[in-house]
Image 1 (cartoon, rainbow, N blue to C red):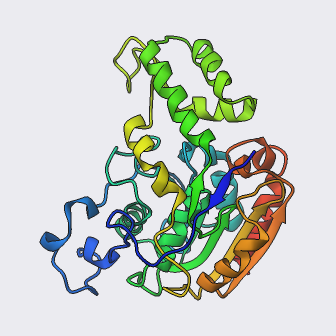
Image 2 (image 1 turned 60 degrees about the vertical axis):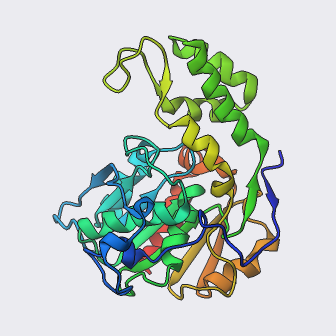
Length: 325
């Protein structure tokens, strides 16, 4: 399956793509941009992200925190088991977040990496987290890299960056991702009422049962606390997500524009095309202090069986060893 297609690099970014100064967006935390909150554009205001927390027995809830960011169509719940294990073994607080327009976090525009990174920085600041290790998978990995690369990031805030199976490149998402949105919209328009009916529709668009089950984690059943309608709806705002697909494939920086010199680990899925040898120089240009490790898994691993069920110990060991070292 052709997952990604390269787009030519350019230094000319659209207003929608252009990274803003995080300090200007969050003046209650930092003032390095010398701009008032009133001067920041409305679309730069961060949203408060929902989260799951795991606090170790020593009661530490700030120092050396591990913050985890899920991928497209994912949520904090994908990481609940691993969060518990990381907190226990590393004796550190772990926070798994729902990014904007995902899980239980607010629906908001724009759906850009700069805005999502601002949300994460807002969370870190409000929780007073220090010496943070930031772990992101897929879309969440791009959010993590966008945060690390923003020149206004306070130098002592981020200690480790861990990126699971994504590269800091501008790409075009394959048609499969658009088809998932199309399938979800069709399910809502059909006003289906059972998970089985929804699963049958999704199977018309995606044959991999693991991917289908993953997409179904976004279902809101009728007459539930989050869905008062008498038919199935989805947690993700479908119109927002559909419009944001080009941005989700993109990246807010180009090589040699900025870099982060901190410790960085890329974890590649051997069966995935999201990191390939053509991207290695770009990755090193952005993150000169980087290393790459490979797991025998596909891209969906951190959401599905290939890394959590079949490779959880290997994935955990890579992350734990990197943080502990």
